[in-house]
Image (cartoon, rainbow, N blue to C red; front, side, top):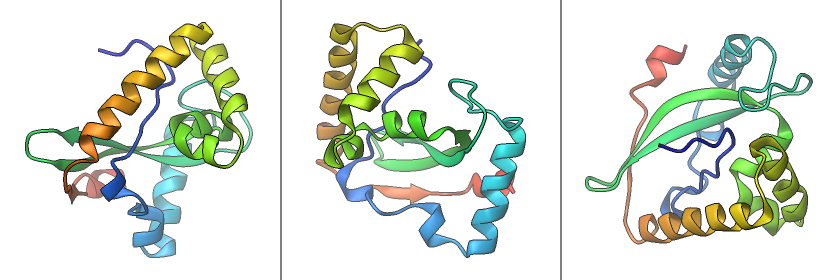
Length: 143
């Protein structure tokens, strides 16, 4: 079990751009994200920061059946969200900022950051070799 507070969540390539925010009617997404903010008490679910929050979809992956399953929607601050989606952070030029936040929140060294990122990239590469089915049956429990 991963003991880090803040982890990378690299989505398999075939699942990119399939998110609830774009798939659901705006009113439903707004209800879901507001419920996540309320459950978190207005604080980032990872680092506890107050202020602007963003909704993050938490998925599990069945690596045998290739099912991406919605687990939760959580409230995170923009800095934690940037770390969670570290690949995007690097693509838009914010990789160093995300690295610094990861290290601060986890009390990690630069070597530990790179080891964790290497492992996340290894898992991402393996998962990206497959087609995935998306299961959003948990959605009913989050409304």
